[in-house]
Image (cartoon, rainbow, N blue to C red; front, side, top):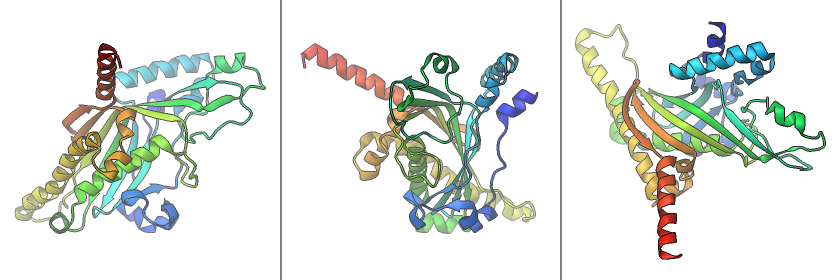
Amino acid sequence: MIYLAVVTWERPRPTLEDTYGWPNTWNLQSGHRGDNGCVFSKKRAPSTCANMLAVNRQVNAELTHTVDRARRIGALMAKMDCIARNGETFYFTWLSIPVVHTTYAYQIRAKPGPMLTWTPKVPAFRKLLTTSHRQQPARSDRSTRIEQLRIDVRIFDNDLAKQTRLRSPPVQTSWAICAALKRLCERDHDPASTRPCPSGVTIDTLILNVVPPSVPNNMPADLRESARLEARSLPQAVTRELVDVWNKLWSGDSFKSRQYGILLGRILKVRICMDGVLVRERELRLELERGQAERRRIAMRVGW
């Protein structure tokens, strides 16, 4: 039970009131809201449980067994929270990163490259023991894989009907999520760092879960049902746009599609959910690899 609590631990979700004091809680890139209104938490990402694997052999075996059990029951996933405020500003913060898989290519190198701050600090012990102290790992050849990443998109809107009529928040939400994912795959998660990170970060399964806004319980019964239907109209539109945004990335006919096209090669498959219910599942990198393999077969057949 203790090991399972360690593996499934996560931070408390921030409230909408926490975002009001963003100079102390959130970090705005270059004094503005960043790409597509994205705001990233200044708190560092939670550490993984990799350090516990180095305690001793018994703890390593027991924790590994717990990780396998959590994977079987679907409890082993990294979690990120996104507060979508009025369809304009999106606050991202890490909740948990239980396990990631990081591989290194060891070469003789004088100066190591930049390193992701949220990856586990425990490298492969066997390789370190057999590597000379004068040799340093080529960090640019590091690859990090996340098995499952779940992003809960919690919608907070002062006037859902007005926002639906006057703006197009679903489109803004989808591009904001793409911007956050691109930042995750390409840059160091330290908010103070602006250096590009050459390491490859891939995600096996990305789960985008749209959470509708809650309806107050003290509302009269005759108004509660209409308010509930209105509160679900915008989340449904956001869900449809999240399903459609991947078609836009495949087409590559706009600047944003080309800007975030890298995600097609970094994510194996994506699941779009609404309030925990699966709406659509689509393969991304697997589909891309099949297309590339077919292109190579055609090239060999025609002699290119």
